[in-house]
Amino acid sequence: MATAPDIRHHPATLAQLPIPVWYLLRIEGLAVAAVAAVLYARTGASWWLFPALWLVPDLSMLGYLASPCRGARVYNAFHTYTLPVVLGLSGWFLHARGLAPFALIWINHIAVDRLLGYGLKYSNGFGWTHLGVKGRDAARV
Image (cartoon, rainbow, N blue to C red; front, side, top):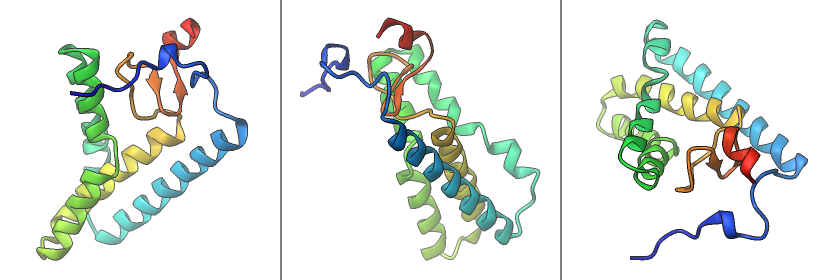
């Protein structure tokens, strides 16, 4: 089974993204978060549901209790747009409109994470993301 390369040994680490890329990724997160919130408002779902479920995708961090590699895989699975988009489209095509608010909350969560600079994780550790190295890991780069 092929494994992902260890980016600590890569000559150009992701410690710092070029400033224009940094801004573009954050603006993209802001735009997606705003669109998801506006669409959520149009669903007519109760606003108490939004904060009540907003942190649910972060439960995927529990995968780090098993190992950094497993944690990164679980976290990344719940922090890509693929699953919430599939959930939303499934609701649309199956005429289960009640799924849309859940998908939009999930999308908003991911977008706000990107806005704040939290990206998909590498197996090196929680701080190693596709948007750069964060926290204690940044000091080691």
